[in-house]
Length: 235
Image (cartoon, rainbow, N blue to C red):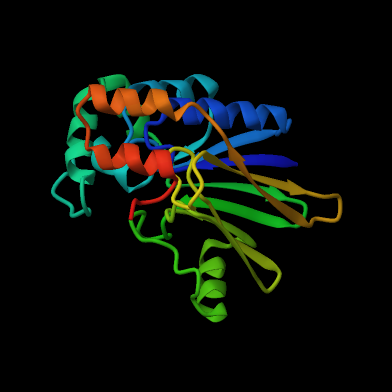
């Protein structure tokens, strides 16, 4: 079983297209998208329609839920709220229904156990994974989820940590990576015949010039273009 997991697409269509092409090149059996599908980027409608057309199982992130259910009063830092308000204006009933119909997590039973993927933490899609949490805390979370392996998107930086015989994984970000290198992050998970789960993180280049052009054309905050260009916050 070979699986590609995409996270934090953030309405960046060229990054999504590059990530999907990389997944095809890897001959994966399935592709999952683990929120935030929209927010920050200039292509919310196009990204949602592409994911829908491909039939990709998707999990909503906090940005997706805020747009889908008009929860703009919730606090987010920086430019996020203004962009989410703009995003809501771009989406038709079709895209809003797509977001509202998403399941909070994806699961699959593999030879070695269950793999579960979600955005944020089990009780809060806006919370970020504490990568330094003690082992007991993480194991309790895994027990609650009834899973051996857990994918928790939200930090925009590829990361994994072994916890006992389990794995704690963040796929990074397709559309707004913060790992210090521009490009789309793609997580490849492959289970061998003995039930061992192997991890690879891909950094996929794409034409971010088009994204920056579209951000400028829509007069969206220039800080987003800088993050995409640098692969990190400037400064």
